[in-house]
Amino acid sequence: MAVVSVQNANGDKISEVDLQDSIFNITVKGSVLHQVVKMQLARKRSGTASVKNRADVSGSTKKLFRQKGTGNARAGSVKSPLRKGGGVVFGPQQKSWDFKINKKVRKLALKMALSSKLQNEQLIVVDSFGLDEIKTKKFNEVIKALDVKKTLIVCDDDDKNLILSSRNVQCAKVLNSDGLNVYDILRYDNLILIESSVKNIEGRLS
Image (tube, rainbow, N blue to C red):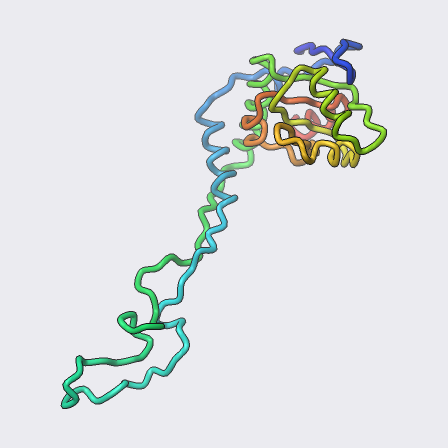
């Protein structure tokens, strides 16, 4: 098992924690990570751009005037794309870019993302942030003491003080261990795990 130091809010080492090699220390394959990140980003696309074609535009379908004898070009419905207020030809329609990846692959990619942080020495375990109140200044002091910049923080429960204290800090994001995902892990330079969240992660991925 990999042994990682546990730090306190001041950045001092207070103990150690064992991390399962089957989760935090496996071979990282970029192709698997790329596949899962691509899936996550595809699911975020709204795909709501949509126009009205001639079938969707409201209006009469009656022929505007007789076919011959008026001197005008032949015309049918007022909803024709050639007329003002008519339907749009070949415009965007609502769609989804979502595609599925096997659950085993998604689980494997999450393990690889965690392993990449440990192998690159970008994973930090903290016993607690020790925030007794909602205070961004105190949160920034802890981040400075841990000597990290762009970081993802994972806790085991909805720590209101931690979540609200970090809300206005652009370089940090707080996630519940249940919402841990590959994209966010790779997006941030550092990964901070609250010590109590380690067991939840190992239980979810074991």
